[in-house]
Picture 1: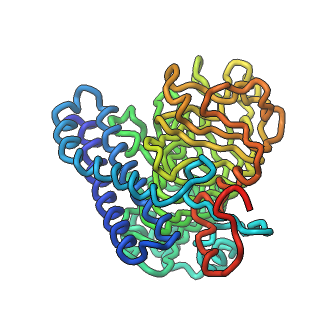
Picture 2 (picture 1 turned 45 degrees about the vertical axis):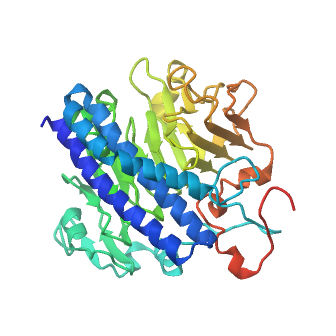
Length: 456
């Protein structure tokens, strides 16, 4: 089996195993609490994730080209019925919610008379919030990693291996300052509730240089990957140094549900940050890249982050996002809220030669919203870029709401049917932490009045 076909095959085995788990959790949730809004959000997330896993499996073989023919046909044929079942389940289950706004999102409840001011989603437990705010030196870590031998282990891989499976409590791994380059760094599905704490961006650095030029699928190029639920990381830099000439090369891939990435740097070129699936929250991070450098099909919010466009290869256009929502019933998308869109120094010096766009539609129902963010003058006046001719231009959902800065003017933006200049704060609020990733699902138990649609 050729190397890239083997990489695609191995990716499929992992992804389909994750799908079986997601579908099992969805079924258990339906049986246990079929009328709960919280349960509905969970089920929609896990079904969406299972569908994304199947798509990623197929895409791996597409990257392998003709070499994957026979193996691809066998694998895709074997999962065809499962894929169709997931699509049907999503369609049926999404019909349980009456979306009055015309914008398909997870939850339509709105708190009356109050603004949500929490820095983190409601599902982040109090103890985890305290850990995120406590200096690393004051945290009692379960495992300490240090290259000089002063910790429990010298490598991050050893720490991950030692961490318990299916942990119901928070398990903390403190990674001391240093540059760590290890062959395989992955927090697998069974490693739940792991938290990684570093000494700060640029101090604790996890680096690597894998790319598709190494006969790997994009999925397998990640310097660091996490699919375990409850994954949290803070104060660490994730880097892929492969460079723009080697094309797809992921620095960080996240697919764990209820994942939080806080005060981290993600540095790469093409496909730097892979927000693969499930519910995720990024806050106060720095993200660097060139082409499609924030991509995937998670329900993910980036809040108060700095997003840096870098100088690409000659003739390349810079695209910040490539969101790949394939089915209109998936509850996924990339809202970018209160962030800054910036150009690195090398791009700033030659930005006239390299237009930067807010995103392009990787799949038919691609969904990205920029809200209350500062946009530099490196952003092209058109704002958005086609993927391939008219593909997805009438089915995508791209929105902009109350952005600022020289790149935020909407006067010359694209005129696609799926592009929206959002003027209603109620519509925009559907893409906030409180609603888009389930942050308001606890409201029914409080007795506080709320809206189920657009009007009072």
